[in-house]
Image (cartoon, rainbow, N blue to C red):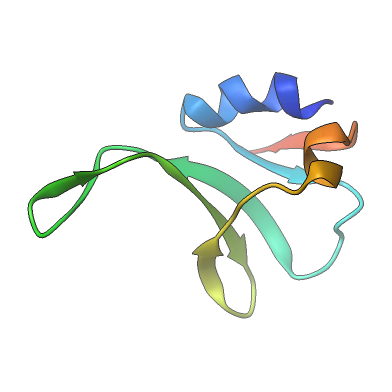
Length: 73
């Protein structure tokens, strides 16, 4: 699946991963409606890994052009 098809799923609280990652990565997700010190934070992406928990995620050009995205339940 392409990133263009995965993005609406992510925006609707879905999770996704690239098949070729196959390592420590479990999924990416979009975080919405978050706040810090009472101030709204714009939506952002996180990646969940087995070893380190959550980290910030920004797709690379390779991620955006890839066709191996799949939905994670």
